[in-house]
Structure formats: structure tokens, C-alpha cells
Image (cartoon, rainbow, N blue to C red; front, side, top):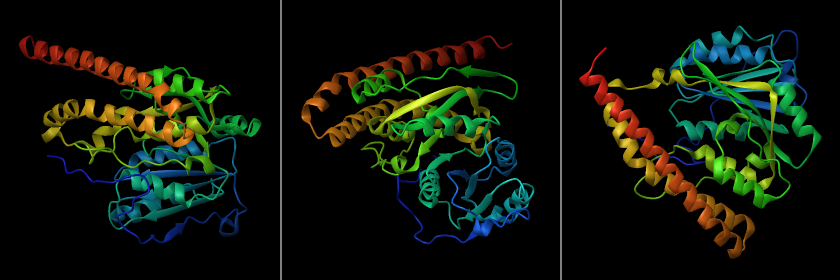
Length: 333
């Protein structure tokens, strides 16, 4: 079976920090660059072909004053990664690479990038995704207008294959009242805003302690926990003028076909435990934030309803997929 790595937000397998490799920009003295307002952190692991697309989308941004940091979890790819980055050396104010000698895991990679940021605003960009050319300009404009806004996100375009995509309209968590934002999040929030632009001082306050038995070795859905805490800290606003472009079909680069069926079955068994853990952590974060048992009790029924909705939706989806699988076997095209 798949070997899971136990990790949580902020945990490090390797205490040593790899050497930073700065990709020199001939047009600018980027070793002495001014403090830039935005840092973009890109975690990568064995997907250099896809990473080039992400870097290109950043290289054509209309807003230029940002730095890019790449955290590479596959040290053996370092030379190839440097060659790819050199193609963009004159496109960025600052571009650098950290290559870890061991695979620190996805969460630790994300945390490493955040910890390296010293700018006012911070965002992650997945190595297989891209953003529209006005992405940073539009999201920075949102954060600049109101200090109570902690995160900004654009509409998201999701590709399920190279040619098939859907555009999801932006949600709103822009109420000045924390209680209303919490209700809206629990009723129907997605995780797209994880790849939005955040005020660094708030995203750095977010924590994830890990899930409880029997799924204490799973990290799926952590982005919901972090986004929920940002909802407590302040408003999230969205723009329909820019796009985050997600390529969901590229998971195949990391897939293990031999265990695909077993993995899918295991995920279905683990799903209710995971969602129960997620909703429990929502309540825990509410309690930690308000420090008032009345607020905690107020949201327990909402969290339970959210959990039940997840279970019903998952059961319907899994049943539909199972019938389709059986039908295709019985009546092949």
C-alpha cells in the first residue's frame, strides 16, 4: 500500500536549510533587491515540465514587483531545475531555488516557502497550475483597499483534461461580521482561495495540529483548516477580473496505477473520518479564537450539518461511480 508520511503544519523532517540558489537577473542587481511586497512560493516535486508553464504565467504578469521562491523536494532534479529557471532569469525581480536532499513532504514544503517569505503579501502557486496575466495586479488591488481583508482570490478555471474546463464563480466571505463569515464557510466554502493572495502576517498565524486516530497519518483537506482560520482573522474578497487556472488532470504524473483501485477504496473508507476530523478542528479553532464556550456551542450544530452534507454527497457520488463501473463492465462500448 501507499506509504504515507506523517507530517503537520510547521513540522520539519530535516532541520537543515538547503542553500539558496539565486538565478541572476542581468538587468537588475537582484542580490540587493528592494523589499518586494509580494512573495510567490512554488513547491515542486518531479514535475519540471509542468513547472515551466507556471513560471511562464508569472513572467507575463502586469504587476512586476514580486519575488519567486521555488522549494524543490527532489534534489536530483536540481540541475534541470536551474536550466529551466535560467530561461526566465530576466523576467523576474528575484528568482531563487531551494533543493532539499530528502523529500520533506507536501505540507512541510508549503510551510518552508511561507517561512522564507518576508514580504507583506504571500501566495502559493502549484507547479502544475497557472494564473492570468493580471492576477497579481487585481488581487493586490483588493488587499490594498482595506486592511480588514486578509485574503484575495480570483475566479477559478478548472481543467479536467487538456481541452475540457469549467469556470467556477467566485464566492464571497466579505462580511464585516465574523459569525456570518463562519456560517458561510461551513455552509459552502471551497478550497480554491488557498492559492489566493494572503496577508503574510495572518497566514503565518494559521496552524494545523494533525488529524486524530485512525487517520493521523493523512494530510488531505488541510487547506480547509488554514482557510477557515483566515476566515476568523478577517474578510476574503474575490475578483471576477482575473483567473487562477487549475490543471486537475496532471495528478497522473504522481499516480501509482498498480494500487489505483485499492487506493480509491481506501479513500472512501477514510473519507468520513477525515471530514469528521475537519469539522472537529473547525470547532476547536472557533473555541481557540473566541475563548467563549457560547460561540463554540452555537456552531456545533452547523459543523454537524456540514459533516452530514459531506457524507451524503460522497455516498451519492461513490454510488454513481460504482454503477457506472459495473455498467461499463457488463456493457462495454
